[in-house]
Image (cartoon, rainbow, N blue to C red; front, top):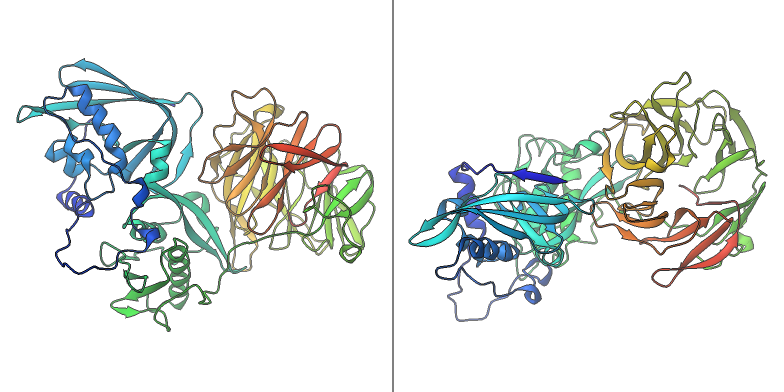
Length: 590
């Protein structure tokens, strides 16, 4: 990404300016008696506070711009030094969190003409106004123009690009922002659906999180999740205060008809309470509407039954396929040894004409596709069937927590990419189709996996016939009240720094394990891809075909498959242990 912008701010409304300045002000204590402070996790972290230099007298225009950029990290502190480098008008208009760029290295500053400076920087990531982090491909740059004016004989920045927010180093980002979780709901399964956002640290963090929770659902999840924050629900006051003694956060809400909508109240209660309690330093949440508590007990605590739970998926057995035999193994062991006798299952033989084997969580249902990708095979409790009329170039099947089997492929007759789903417990059920929106007509779906919460899907897509040019997308699965899929929401890119993606699996509700390449990689690697985080490569393994994910409750353990027919478990921080031979490793429920 290379951008060249020279537009200047024209000004914002006085109300916004007042709100921004109010959020940066502080009050000195006047009472000589000691007072309790904010809980540790919601106040500015003491170990990251620093002394940021103010503008020096007679500083040059480049020194003023450099000093401003260096002081960006202190934007959320009471003593916001960065605004001292700006004119009073620009300081009142600047909204730092509107657009955050994460820099790779020091910016280059060049004087264009008297009072005009050009700054070029390498950029590794961007956080938008909603708190979404997007990692950018290596080599991305940005160039911006700063204009300065003399104020009482001293240079100050009077204009910068309209969308300028913050420029932070990676270390400054980790100090000034926190990776937080906005929660949506899957009411059919009673599950929270997490969506990671990067929000500014400090006393305002609970307020920022509550506002994010009340904002509209992002487009790629619209119709796939439920939220109580939709519509006109908003905060009555500009902050979510946390009582320093009781550590109770009070959320004052307003919105027409909220109190009369019991389902919406229950959703708001679950979402806001669970997300705020996860911040740490908050022991209770009091949701109020028109001054009255929405919760019968007054305060929601960690022990309150909210009607929803986090997804914590784990498996204690998996299937190792060796030719046509299925062996039940323990995927939690480093050597993938056979499982104990009490975990055995009555399983069929699967002819080698079927591939891409998948299994339900209970191992009572299996699915596979023909080697030529034209037929779908299903097995349930001793009964089996073959569906030869689904489509062509079918992907490996996947099971979802709603009890459905999914495949993707090409509709017969050379039409656009398509998805199919079918009941996993009825071998005679007919597969139903869904279209894949917003794909180029030349693209095909090469892999499709449903998230552990059942609301989202991973899609590996790429040009037909070009296996080394796959890209990763995430899209919501729109369902009706009974949990039956009706559409796929418009997908959004994930892991854009990968130039090629060949496989992807859900490791948890917030992280994916991907097999692919960056521009600098000569061969495929495995990557941990936190959705809303930074790509982290796994150790190199020669002949890598794909990396699978074994869910462990709080996370997952990667298992690599290589071209020589071996599976490898992780050893140390970046090594692999040669565990066992096999043709396929099947993780139940995925």
